[in-house]
Length: 195
Image 1 (cartoon, one colour):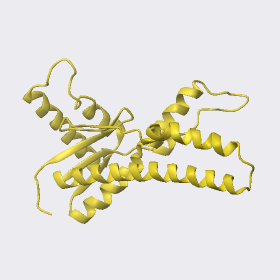
Image 2 (cartoon, one colour):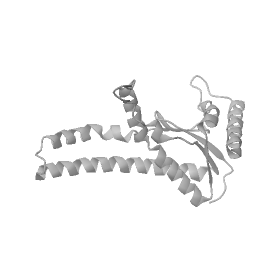
Image 3 (cartoon, rainbow, N blue to C red):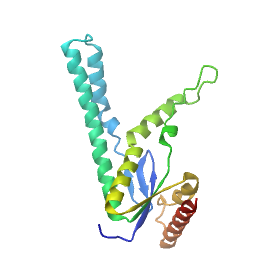
Image 4 (tube, one colour):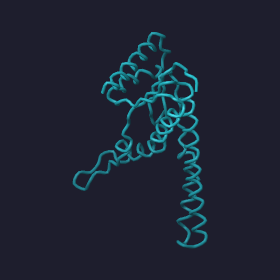
């Protein structure tokens, strides 16, 4: 693939699936939410069937089809996003996120119960619905095949550089502000390479 001479930083999120240092915001399609009403109806229907009966098996197959459809939609959207990032940029920088730690349960124990368990449960569901790990994996293998470079940066170094990359709501940032952000991102990449 021909070189583009461009580099990009990606900030993964729940509200916005990916915010790039170019100022592009990729909306989160929320695939689970799109099918949740029909899936819930199918699950209620299954609960009214006698276990082991033909209709129970039919209802189980219907639920499996909904979940497969959700997974296919998510995979297709992530394929398209990763392909566009790899095609348009030579260097792709992303946070080295510990997704399993981020989506860990907040229930706690009997002696030490968790706090805000319901909110944390919703966040965990949203994180798993985004498919961050699959997106990073897709970017990695597509970049390797295309001869591109992917850099995973420590979030402690990366976050300050990318927090300002998102465009401000009140006014468009100036050209100088974008150059400053690009410089900060470049410094964060250099620090990561040294370690």
